[in-house]
Image 1 (tube, rainbow, N blue to C red):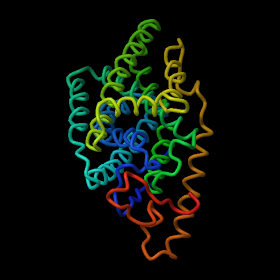
Image 2 (image 1 turned 135 degrees about the vertical axis):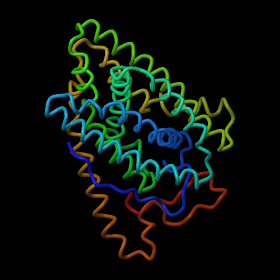
Image 3 (image 1 turned 180 degrees about the horizontal axis):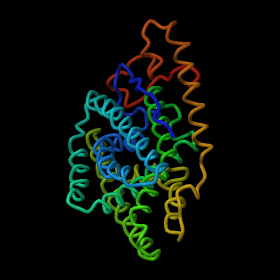
Length: 304
């Protein structure tokens, strides 16, 4: 496990609907990005103290986890600046995540770690789905696709760290108690995730001019229709409820290799193309800025 040196190549002209010009697919990623910095800061605060009291390998993994999550927070701050520049007000979404993590500030260290473990299960299965199924980021802006692929690689890579840390923290508990607590927590965290992330996406779509029912039906169709991220994530989500579950029971290490290969290819392609372009930002997402009335349609980089 390692923290990769990555910096986001944002498009010169920020776009709201950067995933295939699709407002619903874009809203999913945009709403996640809006809450990532505060969420990742909470997870860092929750897990970081445990590196002093765990076995050497787990302690080293925790340090790498913290470094990776700090990088994710930094780069999603950059993406969030781009969303703001595109005209979104993401403060309502960020207030929701601040309220959520605030509920745990006076909780025990074990409780905060348990919440982190459950959040990590959700992010890991979404990351694996995004990495495994190319269509989720197909025809998306170049630089933002890189950002999400990089993030997904590291989420998969460190997906067991919070789980292992929590298991160690409650090692004196009985097996049935550990099972009951972790499954109850995942259920509550998942309900909160579904409600709050849906509200976040609905708010962004409201700012796009969509009505309530069109937004809701569009999100359900996009997320839980055939091939949707939500639909495809149900089975790996349920795996958490198996007694004796461990995150690496789902062995998706091949997705890490796939992601690293793709990122290397994208980096090489950008390096080769940039010198021949008068504006290097063109290869980062757009061949020309869209018209204001384009409704999210975009020209793509040739070959993408």
